[in-house]
Image 1 (cartoon, helix red, strand yellow):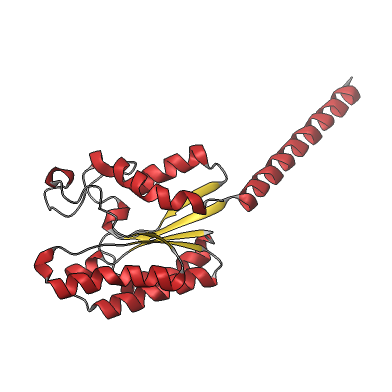
Image 2 (cartoon, one colour):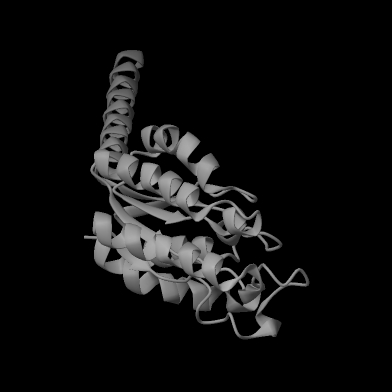
Length: 215
């Protein structure tokens, strides 16, 4: 009797081991085929003043899970980030997540600090070149400065993004806040960061340029 029970127990243990091995192999296969979208942004992408699941990047990740299950999104955005900060850490972020697509949403803090547009452009170019060197597609998201910064500065700042998108043939959203910029109620008390209610609008605004890259 003990011999029969022992043989049965051994078969069960072997079955469990085979099942676990199959599960591990399946998980490894899924990990190998999952592709990544990396977002390098500032507070507009990190969800400043919002719950973790309310920002446009989090909403984009939710949409991707339903519409593109072979993809995941890594949000490496940092509140207060400048293009210099993005340029200094882009290599490490790419090595960490090995993205197939990199979304670059940086520059607003450069503009608010009055950084020379030429320096902003140089930093953004480092980020774009790094992504392309890693064989990742790039979606560049532009920003604009308010008119009180002066016509020459605001024009040069905006032109940076147009120039880089053409030079490097990237996907391009000229102005992240375009759908809501004229609506004061779309912003938090600081008049800089969008409220939760308009984040789906921003998600949809970016999605039109992102979706074709998810192939």
